[in-house]
Amino acid sequence: APLSYQSSSQRRKRCNFGIAFDIDGVILRGRVPIGGSPRALRRLYGDSGELNVPYLFLTNGGGIPETKRAKELSELLGVNIMFSQVVQGHSPFRNLLKKFENELIIATGKGDPTLVMSEYGFKKVVSLEEYASYFESIDPVSQYKRWTTMPLSDRKMPTLPRCDVSSERIKAVFVVSDPVDWGRDIQVLCDVLRSGGLHREANRNQPPLYFAADDLEYQAAFPSKRLGMGAFRIALESIFNRINPKGLEYVSYGKPNPFVFKNAEAILNQLQSSLCLDHSENNGVPRSHPFKTLYMIGDNPSVDVKGAQQAGRPWFSILTRTGVFRTKDNHAEFPADLVVDTVEEAVDYILKREC
Ligand code: G3P
Ligand code: MG
Image (tube, rainbow, N blue to C red; front, side):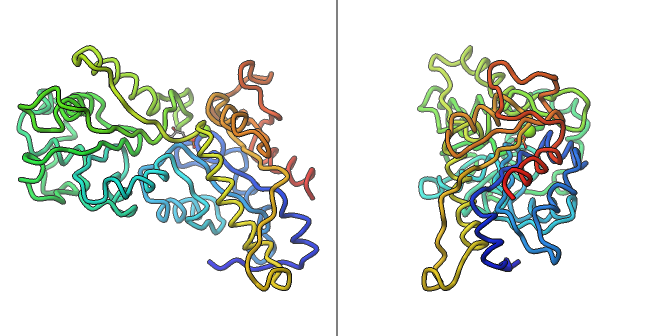
């Protein structure tokens, strides 16, 4: 939706700061809003629903395209969220398009990883589930998995002709979101990473492997922390390194990598220039001003706070007690600039400080 502009006095006052919200453990647990998040977000909009404060979601989660996630978040949180305000762990995968646009690649994880990659422009994406379905007995325990008794015709596949998958080398593997069937995925990925998927040609060069994030644990709907993509990476790596002479090579994206925060700053800058645009000031061409402060509100010290710390100025970290972090005192290894109970308290603090 187009953004409406405010009076210039209001604009100048509000536009030298921005906010990045973590999702799991700060805004939502599972699909349930927490910590007063809908009220907190509403405070960033004016009476007629216009956005007043540049903000975005900076999550290591994913599995659905940013367009869909923005719609889903808008419904859950009751505000109008644009897709450009949603940065997921896998969002930087689109930067690898040039390299793999027409190559056969595997995408895996919960949700719809092939749709995610297709929306980024990758042309030959096969899900790990679909890939495995082409090879009878590739998973020796599949018959014991009740969920695989669903007939293939009822599942969302296939998308590629059978011959492509069994005769063409897999050029890269993308772990888009948290893997669903660890046992099968570790087995099949060990095959693919050792041979590119051509099962008689073991010990060829390993195809590149990309993880959307490396969170060991995260806060989902269950009361205690759940194992995340980083835990899956450790499991895959430990096993791969035992059966293969050369260690697993991979790249992990997501927080706390500094480039994620640089990218968030660039997006917030664009948002800021559309909100703060003074048409008379620069012949109508949006001009952004450097941020005085960018707030990262997160629940995971070693991911959200560490990331903000590494990114340096103008980042300011706020830790909530609604997710991975729960203790009274600040975190010892990665102390946040501020610790609060909820995201609502965090937004309250920011607005009092800035406005
Ligand atoms: O799978 C999601 C998880 O790894 C973390 O999500 O929103 O806390 O960065 P978030
Ligand atoms: Mg989190």
